[in-house]
Length: 176
View 1 (cartoon, helix red, strand yellow):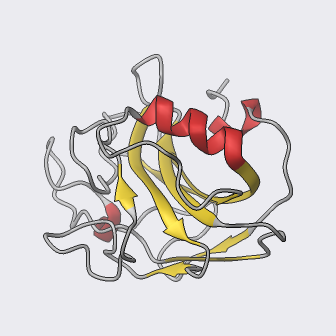
View 2 (cartoon, helix red, strand yellow; view 1 turned 90 degrees about the vertical axis):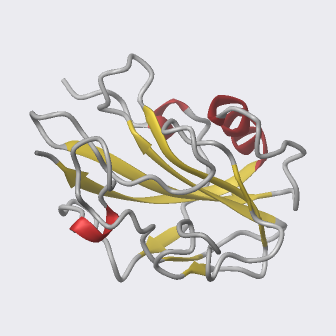
View 3 (cartoon, rainbow, N blue to C red; view 1 turned 180 degrees about the horizontal axis):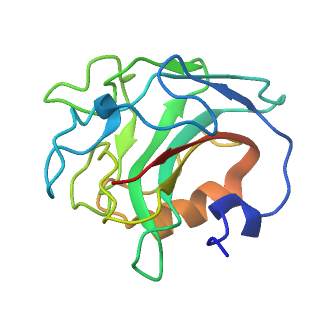
């Protein structure tokens, strides 16, 4: 039985609509979004994401990517981005990567992912069954989470959950 998805253990909240020109729910990630290390030769670009349907009172957003199938006992955080302004409802391809994070809004903060970097890190599963990559957008009732980029993904996640008004996700797959 596959590991539970991260949102399956969280309090129920209204759904956001999350869409992408780069990834499709239930389909395979393109090499554009695969890691470029650990034996992988992808381009390590974060996908384009857009969202709608945030409830009244939304003051900010967070975006995460989590692999619940990683053989770690605790999954694997690929992307932890928070303190996005409420006026932002789309991120372009590559906003979470590169030397200048082109397209990332001012004030947005990356926490260190499980690769140890403050950016998006693409898929890099070990050989075997494909893994699920859960890209989630969280509508928050605060404009700032009150944590910084050195905060662990688990603590950032705790603060995201405590302030979530709505959430939505796209789940893509990748395997080697």
